[in-house]
Image 1 (cartoon, rainbow, N blue to C red):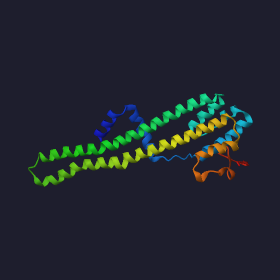
Image 2 (cartoon, rainbow, N blue to C red):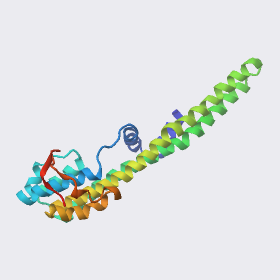
Image 3 (tube, rainbow, N blue to C red):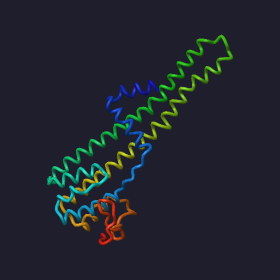
Image 4 (cartoon, rainbow, N blue to C red):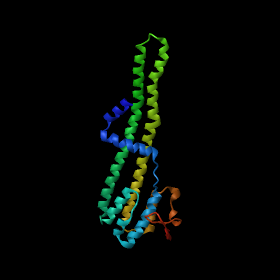
Length: 232
């Protein structure tokens, strides 16, 4: 464990390692509940408010996603489209970089752990062979020597590789969702009609979830259903 951690610290910047650890374990045990469909519904409802009351109405809307909230604040501040694109694209790139570093850190742990497990086994064998006076202790010593290899394999295949794969999957999904949010913000800033927005944004949905607008009602930004109007 010490050798694996030390080698990882040498390979990556210290701050990168300490960022990767909480991000990786959070990805391993916390499932994201937000879906593209939820963001599209919120964007359609917010667009309706903005078309009615102006862009200042976006400032009063509260959403759970910080990235989405940041975009709405930029709209409420009256920023132009190019400025919004620049700020949100930079934010998306930084988030992608953190997730990418996290995946690389855990993949490196997966590479180092079996190697240092074998190193521990070799050290144990040297210690065992240096004390051959009592043959009855050879089997016990061999078992202890091989134990480090077992720990290395378990650490790599049970912890590091699954977390690295999950971080890579999270990175791809996060990029897709953030791209959708940026497009939602653009449409809101341009006060696009909800029907036109739906035609543009549904391309971000899985094939089976498209054309849902004809059946679903608006969801207001506070999470309540608005049954009076539906999206066609």
